[in-house]
Image 1 (cartoon, rainbow, N blue to C red):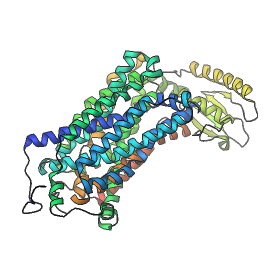
Image 2: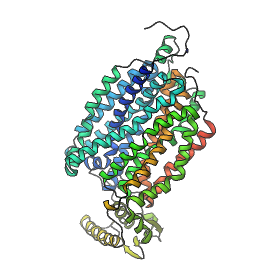
Image 3: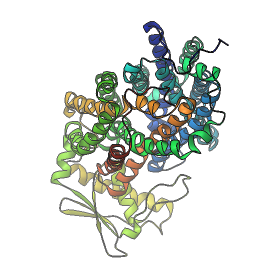
Image 4: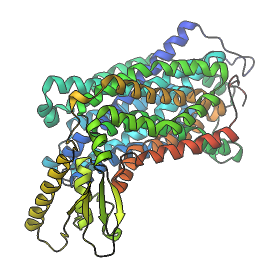
Length: 556
C-alpha cells in the first residue's frame, strides 16, 4: 500500500489519457452487461413460446414480461449487497464480480432446455437466472458510475459520467443488432426454433473481453486515499440508511429523480417496441430496425446533456425531460399509430368497437400457473379482441347479460362457456372468432400493419424524439446521484434509489402498461402509468432536491 498523502481531500490530478482509459474500460464492460440483460426483453415473445407454452397466449406473454421484470425487481437487493461490498472492499473488485455473474447467467439461458423438454423446471430455472442477472446489474451501475466520477475532472463530471449513461442504450442497440442479424441470416422459422439461443451464447465472447479489460484497471484513487486515512465506513448499510440525514436524501433521490427518469427511459425504449409490435401490429423485424434507428440517432444526446449539465446544472435538464415527456406522450404515441398502421386508426375512428358486458363477468385475464379458464362471455369477447390487437371501449350491461361485441352499428353476441365441455367450448369459440373476425375485416381492421403503408421516416423521427427524452433524464443522472452522497457510502447510497427507481418503477412499465391496455381496451391507456410517475418526480425533485453541479466529492 502506498504511503498516505499529507492531506485527505486534496485535489487529485489525472492525465487526460488516464481518464479516457477509465471511461472507456468502465463503459465498454457495462455495455456488454446491459447487452446480456436486454437480450431477454428483446426476445420476450419468443421466450414466452419456449418457456411458458403451458399457459394460454395472453398469460404466457404477460408472464414472460413478468419474468423480464423479475430481473428488475431484485436489482435493489443487488444494489444493497454489492454496494456494501464496493464501499468496504473497493469499486474495481466489486464490478469485476458482477460482470462474471451476469455473463455466466446469460450463457446458461442460451443452453437451457425449453418447457417442451423439461416441463415446469424450464421457467423456474429461467426465472432463477433472471434473478441472478438482476442482482448482478444491481451492483454494476453504481460501481461504474462511482468509479468514473471519482476519476473525473470536477468541472467535467457530467460529461465523463454521461458515457456510462450511453451504455444501457448501446447495450440495447447491440442486442437488437445481433438479434436482427441472426434472424435475417437464419430465417424466422429457424431463429424462433433454435437460433434465438445464439445471441445468448455470444455473450461468452463478450464476457471474456469485459473481464480482461476490467483486470487492467486500478482501484479508484479516491477510495484508496479514503482507506489509507481510515475514513471509510465500517458499516455502509447503517451509515447509508440508519441515519436520517442520509436516508432522507436516498428517499428524495428515489421519488424526485430516479423514478421519473426510469419510466421515461423504459417508455421511450422498451414500451415503444412493445407498442409497435403488440398494439399496432408492425412486424418484429421492421419494429426492431425502427427502434435501432431511433437509438442510433438519439444516443449522442446522452453526451450532449451530460456536457450541458456541467454548464447549467443536472436538475433543470432532468426535470424538463419529465415535464416534456408527460405533456407529449399521448400525441406521440397516437402519431406512431397514424404512421405505423393508418388502417387501424381509420377503422377505430369509422367503425369503433365496443364490448357490452356485465362488469362482474369481466376478469383480469392473467393466470401465472395456467390453471384458470377464462370462459365467461365477457372474457371470450375481450380475449379475442386483445389477441387481434383491436382497440375497444367498455359499456356496462345489466347483471346476467351475455356479452356482445359491437362493431360500428352491428352487434355480435358472445357466449357463456362456463357450462360447456372443452370440445363444445372450442367449437363455439371458433365460430365466434370467425364471425367477429370477418366483421372486423369488413369494417377495415387489419390483421397486421401493411408494410407498404408503414411510414418509416416519420416513425424514426418519433422514436428518436422518445430517445432524446430518455437522454435528457438519463444523461445527467449519474453525476447528480454521485454528488448527492459522501465518498464512504457513495456506492451503497446511490445504488439503492437508482435500482429501485429503474428496477421497480421503470422495469415494470411494459408489464403494467400491457395489463392496463388489456383491462381497458384503449391502446393508449398504459401511458397513464409513466405519465403519473414522471409528474410525481417533477414535483418532488423540483421542490426538495438540491442542485449539485460543482460540488466537491470530498465534501463529506
